[in-house]
Length: 211
Ligand SMILES: [Zn+2]
Ligand SMILES: [Zn+2]
Image (cartoon, rainbow, N blue to C red; front, side, top):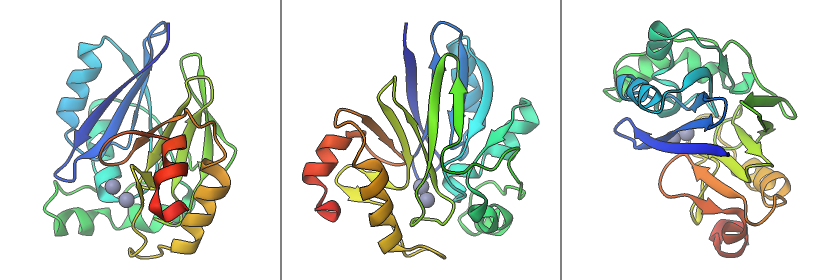
C-alpha cells in the first residue's frame, strides 16, 4: 500500500501534470492541469480512481490552462496557487490565445493556498510551501510520508525556474529554495514542472545555481 504517481506531460510545453493517488482508497488528485484534458480523464478511468481535487502550483498557462475545461466535465475543487498569482489567472484568455493553446477563460480557484496549509489525498498529507520567485504566488506540495515534492517551475534537474517573467524575482527564488527546499531530507523525490525527476540531495550537490 502506497502513494502512487503518474507523470503525464501535457501541452506543447510538455508540462508534468501529475496524477497522485492512494492505492488503498483510490482517491486521486491532479496537479497542474495545463491541458490535454480528455487524456487526463482517460488515465483516471484506466486506474479506476475517484478524482477529489486539482492542485495548482502557479498560474502559468501550461499549468493552469486546462482547469476550466476539466471542471466542465468533472466537478472538483481547485486548490492553489497563492493569491499573488491572481493576475496570471486573470490573463489566461489572452495568454492562451497568444501561445496558440485552446483558449481558457479566466478563473479563480476554490481555495487560494498559503504557507503551512495542508492538503490530503487519501491517507496522505501534503504540506504547502510558498516559493515566490518564478511567479509571486508559486506554491509547492511536500509529502513527508511519501518523501515526495511536487515542485512546479521552482526547481528542476540541475537548474531552477526562470525569473524573467512579469513579477519574477531571482533573489527571492534562490532564497526560498535554499531556506525551504534544500532543508528537506536528501532522498526526497522532486517531480519538476518539466523534464526528469530528481532528488533534493542531488540538487544540493550538483545544481549550479544553488552552490
Ligand atoms: Zn511557470
Ligand atoms: Zn511550466
